[in-house]
Length: 86
Image (cartoon, rainbow, N blue to C red; front, side, top):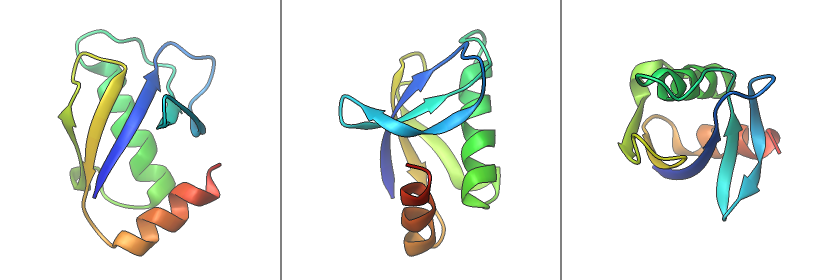
C-alpha cells in the first residue's frame, strides 16, 4: 500500500495525525540529518501500526518532507490503525 506523508522533523514530540497537502502528517523529534528523521518515521509508524519496521519502506522523498511510503502487511489493519490516529 502506498501512503503519502508529510514529515515535520525536529518537533517537540512524536505524533501521527492530521494532514498537510493531502498527506498524512507525521511529526518526529529527530532532526533531518543523515536519515535520522526517516528512521524515526519508520519506527513510529511501526509502533502505531503494530507491524515490523521491515514492512515500511520509503519509496520516494528520502531528502524531502513530502514522502511516499510503501507499507506491506494486512491492508485493512493498516487502514484502520491510521484512521484511529486522526
